[in-house]
Amino acid sequence: MSALQTRNFNGTVNFIFQPAEEGLGGAQAMLSDGLFERFPCNAIYGMHNWPGLPVGRFITSTAACFAGGAFFDIIITGKGSHGAHPHQGIDPIVIACHIGTALQSIVSRNIAAQDVAVLSITRIQSGYAYNIVPQTAVLAGTVRTMKRETMILIEQNMRKLATSLAAGFGGEAKLDYQVLFAPTVNNPNEMKLFADAAASLVGEESLERDSPPNMASEDFGFMLERVPGAHIMLGNGGSAAVHNQLYDFNDEAIPFGVGLYAAIAEKKLVGPKIQLVVREGTDVDLP
Image 1 (cartoon, rainbow, N blue to C red):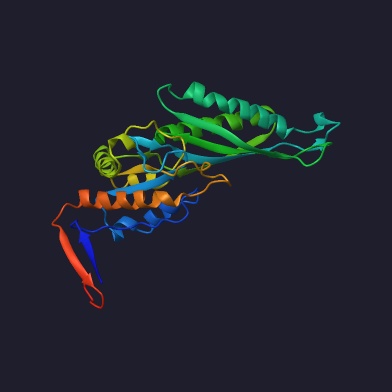
Image 2: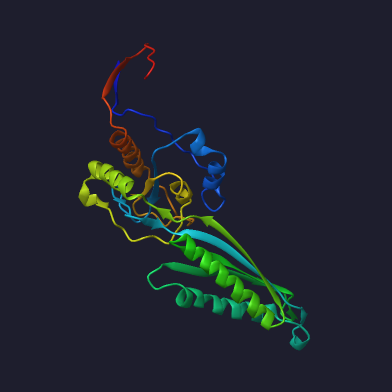
C-alpha cells in the first residue's frame, strides 16, 4: 500500500492555537508572551465559522471586518433609605436611569456620522426588597467601534457624563472600562490573496469580497496590528447563531476551512513542487 503526498510550498507555516478568545485576552496574552518573536511571521490568516452562511461560501471585507470592543461597568453609590422616606436617601436607581438615557447621546451627538459605533447597556443591577431604596446600582454593557480613537472618545464622554450626573444628584459614579478587542482590519494585499485562495476552491460566485463590517468583535485584531494579514468567514449552514445554546457546529464546513489554509500556504509560499511517495514500513524525513 502506498500514499502520495504533495508539498507545493517553500517556507514555514506556523499554526496558532489561541485560548480564551472570547473576552479573556488570549491574543494579548500570546503577544505578551513573545508569539511573533519566537515564531516570526510575514503574514497571518484567520477564519471564523458563520451560521446562516451556506457551507461552501466565504465572506470577507476589504478593510475593517470586525469592530473593536470594550466591556464597561458603572458603579453608582447613593445613600440607602426606607422606600417610604426616599427624601432621607440618595436613590442610585434614579441616577442609573438618568445615566443610562444620557449615554445614548454619545453615539448620536459625539461621534461623526460617517464613523460607526455602538453603545449597549446590557445589565442593570440594584436592590433586593420592595420597600428599601438601595445603596448602590450597577450599569454594565459593551461598546463597539471600528476605530481605536472612537473607542477612546466614547470612554472619555462616558466618564464625564456618569460622574457629573451622579454628582448632580448627590451621589457618586465610577467607570470601569476595559478594551478587550482591537478592530479587526484586513491588510488589502493579504486580503486579496486570501480571497483569491478561497475563490480557487469554491469559485468567485461563492465568495463575497467586500462584505459590510460586522459590529461583533474578534481579538485576532490585536495580531493584525502586529503582522499584516486577513480574516475570512466560513459558511456553517443553517445553525442558530454563535453564543446561543442551540448553536451547532457543522462538520461539513471542515474540508473548506482546511482546504483554504492549504491553498493560502501554496499561494503565499510559492516554491518548487515536491512529490514524495511513502510506502508502508518506510521511514522518510520530510524536508
